[in-house]
Length: 247
Ligand code: NAP
Image (cartoon, rainbow, N blue to C red; front, side):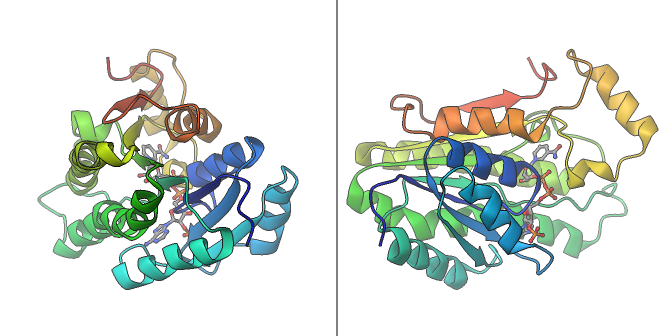
């Protein structure tokens, strides 16, 4: 068991924003617990990438919708590293459709992964943070959780739910020195947004004061600001990383 370095558990960290968050924490001297769900990830090359920054990594293939598996994931992290200093609930999906056409399973899947997944992993990790009387939780919401978006009623509901959850956890666990915050990214260039057509992307860029999509690394900087060891007095906040979309 390696106990000296701080430890960050990041869900959905095999690619996109989650991977950029993992790299940022690795650069800042953390060991990593990297969660993912599909078999498509080249674990060994990811392991090498994180090791270049000195991070030991435990990879855990777990669907965040399953509470029992999330409890096992937290236990595995503790068995390996002895503690979890930071939890980043990043795993998320979209299943966009206009409400008239949205299937019940499209609503349920998005709520289950994005919102219930955040509940499952947080519930599994906080007993260890409470025992240690210290912890930081960063939940990845979205600007559409604040503003709403046509065609994303399921996704926006899940991301708005995450904001309420984040603030409740902040109030509930402040006495144990556990800080809980959310990041609300705007449009960020990842697999999730790669499916958008060029016309849609151009239209979005025109609505962003900074006139471009964000980078996963730009979100990761904000996650570390709230979830890293230097944050000792910010809790219950939502920080937009969106090029000025929401002011
Ligand atoms: P992405 O590139 O599609 O990556 C999604 C990640 O989540 C992958 O690592 C995936 O694992 C994991 N995942 C999906 N379902 C899971 C499950 N059931 N259990 C565990 N892991 C699961 O997405 P992204 O753009 O980086 O988005 C990351 C987060 O930021 C999401 O919460 C998203 O809603 C939020 N966000 C993104 C944007 C944006 O513009 N991209 C904007 C606002 C908010 P596998 O690789 O194994 O499939």
